[in-house]
Length: 112
Length: 111
Image 1 (cartoon, rainbow over the protein chains, first blue to last red):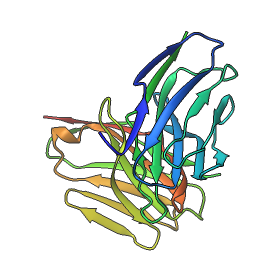
Image 2 (image 1 turned 45 degrees about the vertical axis):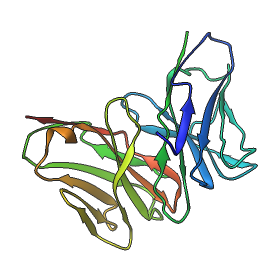
Image 3 (image 1 turned 135 degrees about the horizontal axis):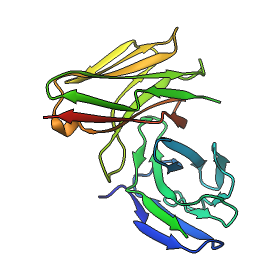
Image 4 (image 1 turned 120 degrees about the vertical axis):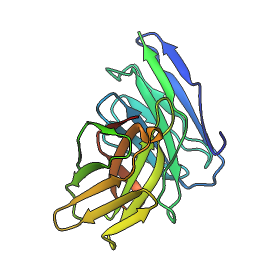
């Protein structure tokens, strides 16, 4: 699977620890997104970025932080302030001309 | 902000029958309505989309209809096959940013 990658596939952390999820794309897309997927709740937007060095909060940004220092990379940090961090996290990217979002394979985070 | 409701949450059909999934949206400014399919353990992938300047779009066995006045859109799958079994998500956005997704429909096609 090329295009957009996420690592690792599975991640385990202890409560109280910050953890950073990686997202890289080689599609030359301007926009990148982070979603959280929980059973029965669809995909909820955490943060998105339209250009380098700029990003906006989505619907559930509390307890998360992001950076966009390079066009290809959009890492997500899940902080200890996130009350229920265990979930499946999906990164996506798209270009303004095509609208279609391309998703990465996801990272399943488990916090105990 | 935008709110997208999707029904039903689960749907079982016999192979060869049709399946219909319905979504409503709240923001009249939304103009882009994609549908994504997510197979078990895999990433969501776009299967069809429609923009607000058209009322219907078809691609082989799948079609999407849009009623802007009522603010609802639907996915129709005809002649269903076992490989159609997956979770389907509708979504709405204004342009290509900040897409709001529905809660998903788990479709099971029974052979």
